[in-house]
Length: 411
Image (cartoon, rainbow, N blue to C red; front, side):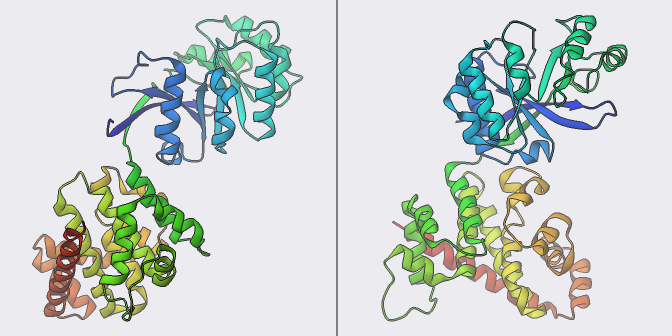
């Protein structure tokens, strides 16, 4: 499977240039054209790669996302199953206004999902859809503006219905479309489709992200957690090994039941274990040194935090562990942070280098880059001796080596 997904995004704007949303167009690579595959397969892959494998908010923010939907997929119920709050289902121009399709549109409307008629051409049967449709897109390359004006005028009784002019390529066309009564505009005059490449998360990585989210909830559902861990046999084995081999206080007998191990660890230890697993999965196909450095940074940051404020050690561990996540995922940290169920302090440290945790990340970076003058300034500001930082670093390396040895003994 390709390690990357590709999607083209084109803005749909109001008369003032503010974005209503973006149409998402499937691509197979950086070449900005629709590939030679059928529309049903294109939509299935776009949904799987952009909605299920990742957060669509990274692409469209809080704006709407318009997605082409062949009527066959509507009949399957794919749109209602997905039920994304900002999604707009575009019914393609080759669809027929059948009673069955009308029922599907009514279901979408009842579920709170917006619907658009794409490249709409007036014809018998479509008027029955108008009370349940939110947008009608008219292609200026196919319909004269006078005919567009007439269609918009005829639909004025449907007060919630809005019209989008497609293929607007010049300022003159924009002005004429605005005068014709269009509400929104899309085309090369404003923006060509922009191809965006995103790294696909593997099944292992998705499971780890889901686990981290589950263990970070205020009230843990231990049955759900047990089911999630049970998906992955090596993960279950390593959890039991983590409980029994890292001297967490259970001395008289081993814990062999998965649910008991989860309950015994408690939330903070579970979060720590799951975060390390996630980092390990993400680094599988990367330089092994990046994972080792992430582990060292996690423990190092935690030990440094103990010198400043013992109450922030758990956040410090997460901060160090995730400090290379942008490199591992090959994506800007700003795109990753919304998916991470970590404290605001950790997010500010990772994203902006702010706060005490951000200061510690800077200290470790100075040390790793041998910026000794900057390192000394930071240590002096903290009132910490150089030897203490060096000892913390050495202890972190030893801890990392112990974890590595434990992993290597895994059958």
